[in-house]
Length: 220
Length: 220
Image (cartoon, rainbow over all chains, first blue to last red; front, side, top):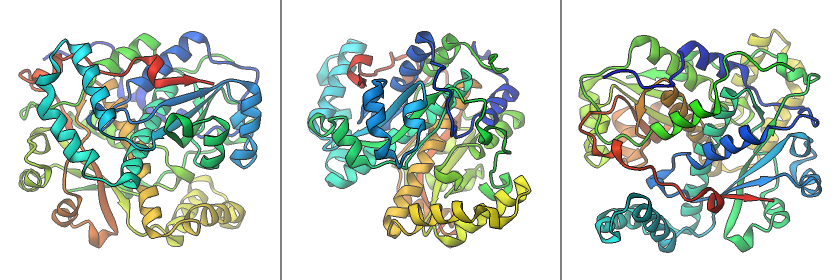
């Protein structure tokens, strides 16, 4: 089998993953171009999720007044207002049968297959996820899916030369309230300011710290 | 500021993310080259995590006898034995002060700074993570970090033209037992067979299903 098109070299990939870092100071004047931003939104939507169920939405906050309000809800961290864009990853608070059916209807639509042909898959999703977990466990499951999307976004952004700062240090309750998420059946899980590093960010020059490969990877 | 080196085009990125899919049938004869595998392990190690704390390890299972044993612990799913490699993402079961200190010692070593200069950061990590959560919450937090690494691995593999199948459908207790994880203070969180799709995998040709961008992304 021939190699697929558009692959990159291992050296380029690793250079990009080493280039990225949790950006502490963003250049507030430098915005992500509409073309790049559109691609990153598309990348977010293309993130894998368990059963393909996509049990959360991505909130993109660009309104400066709202960004300003989110700073005190983020322990004063200025990245939240200074970065070009802010992505708030959310999880559905009560993922259930109706969400499974919405996904199945979308499969039927996109693939042009009858809904009935998905009955077995429906049973698997209901049995394995909806009925196998209580509400808090389902929300925790949905939250974990958001972290796949976060990992995808961080790598995708680095490949486009765009900086980001994954952040758990914020108050989800306050975010939910400021962004009106509760009424949408969503709760904030993790956030990611994204844009371009300021030339003054001292963190950009620090050596990346990881445990040695032999301490992180166990071969069996 | 000029564009960083080694970035790719948005079209290439999106082509790769559309190319990937949850591979159901791997070609059991086709192995990932040592060079590509080494890069993917490096990519795993470079995955971001909260506070840089890396609260889990990556178990790479290649032993055919163990892979065979894992199939019944994975609801019979053959990807677990047929793919070139199997990655088991784990979380530390009792992440605590000693883990924070191991990370700080590594920072001091890699960056050549005195441990004492990290005292404030230490307080933040202990206050924000170790002492802010009970043991189950800390394990859930560690598990979420594994999902960032999973997201990174899936995107990284796609960029190298390598297939993967993220899987939650397995029995963590059985995995922990078969792989001896409990004694290592680890528990399995999510798994990912990785290799090359079989030419007979009917799933490869199906249209990718995602909710429409306007249903997944909310602009504020």
